[in-house]
Image (cartoon, rainbow, N blue to C red; front, side, top):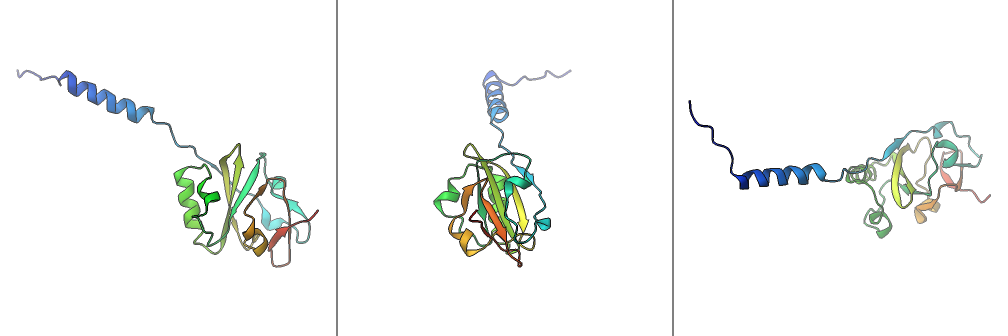
Length: 150
């Protein structure tokens, strides 16, 4: 019977070290994908996204189609790499706006909203893309959203 050769102490040390580093690496947060019905939102009636969500958030960041993702406000958002990839892809899709829900300075949820349901890519919103969660909107007949001055 052949002798089994055990790995050296040095090899065992490095194997344990590598496994420890890989196993102890913090897991990346996973943001919740929200799905709410803005399709049913009545035209001309003020609304907030707060009315459509179960959770409460501090603020909302809207990424409309062709959003310039190199701006410092967007780059400073704390979110997972996978969500940042989704956002980067969505900004190239002219039929979707991506809404990021922020709590305690971290993006904790997001929603992909079809512009046929609610169009957040309006001139007024494109100038101010982060605002309080309770901010009111109003939708016109073409489903374009603007800030409600209530």
